[in-house]
Image (cartoon, rainbow, N blue to C red):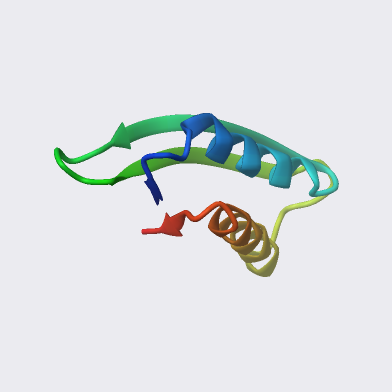
Length: 84
């Protein structure tokens, strides 16, 4: 889940994640939106995604998975998103 200011478009965040995943060699993935929630009167909203990925060459190990997830986090933070 990500928290973003309401001026950030869902597509902008989704595209950023998609573009980051495209950079990983031999990675196949699906990126699906799950939900968008904004509490009444708040200037932020939560965006949820479901990401499934795998390598076409080998079984990914924990450090490799962690690195991909960290890169996603860094990428969306550049847009002002916070991982919750």
